[in-house]
Image (cartoon, rainbow, N blue to C red; front, side):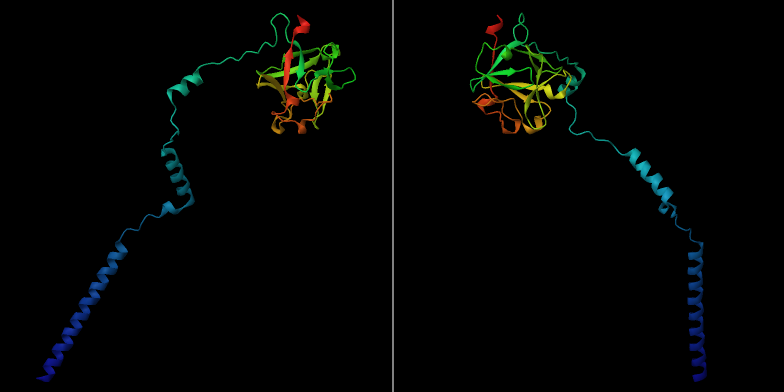
Length: 222
């Protein structure tokens, strides 16, 4: 009786083992038959192609959006004309009287300084356009030299009419004109005259100083 029970237990255990082994074999077969995942996208070539596709499909957003006014401004052609200086009949001939009490004068030896004598011919100047609105050249009529500013901010008479040292930016401040050197505009260097009539170096000038404020006078050319 006991032998029959032992044989039944052993038979059941062997059958269960066989079932488990068969199930394992089936699972293993399923794993082998399973399709492999596609991992080609990890390659550099596919990464480049995918990034290029993403870049092409990416939407370009313009911010801020263009307005009707800005579009019209772009389409409208604006023509800037040169400014006519001085009296239409007299041209740009004038004297520049500084608030320090001197007229800007240019001498044949290349010196530029102030002169309190309004009858001195060296104070007779001509202001002409330098090609852009607000930019001018100042020429002494007697010696035919242009007012220039060197790298140290000193005024001098320049012979060459195409030098960038003779171009100044003319602006109107407090009923007076100021002349900022275009070459040294980032430094804020102006044409200036001291109270004793000597020229004031650019580094010592400021737009708020009386030394850089000039009043155009044209009564000598009428």
